[in-house]
Image (cartoon, rainbow, N blue to C red; front, side, top):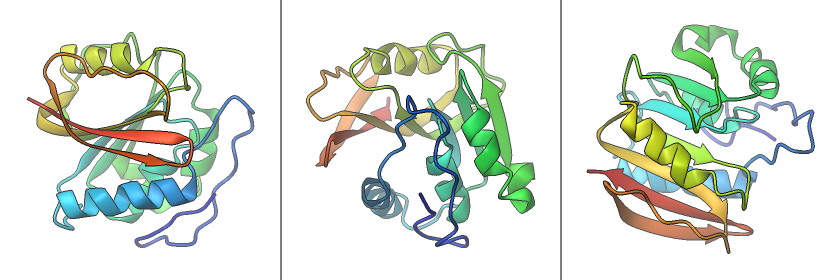
Length: 180
């Protein structure tokens, strides 16, 4: 695993210690970031990212490399993410970590305008986690949400989200949603 673009392009990340963690493939992550770059008009400085089921933290760290204002990484197990964020000491003031079951989030203290979520495949966790962060106030109005699921996995966006796009890369399907 490595950072694809931005300030830290080419920087290597630690692979997950657990076989249960399945990071988004570099090529798929690159494609998603190209789409996001287009949707954001190339301005990452106003982006505040919430990453659910963060695993290795690769998506959030990629976003930091591209200049986001801040990231919050949430997962029930943050060991892999902590190992990788330690490689970015100069970005420490932009990184928040939340050890939590993301289907049972606490009430939000702040809102985020970009969400990336990559739940374990085929476990039915994406819909409840997305509904939970919306209900608990984690997402700003018009928040852009990217939800990764296995390409044949059923996914129905919760009420209040509109589908903007969907793409398949390898085994993954990415849903681009907006919170209305």
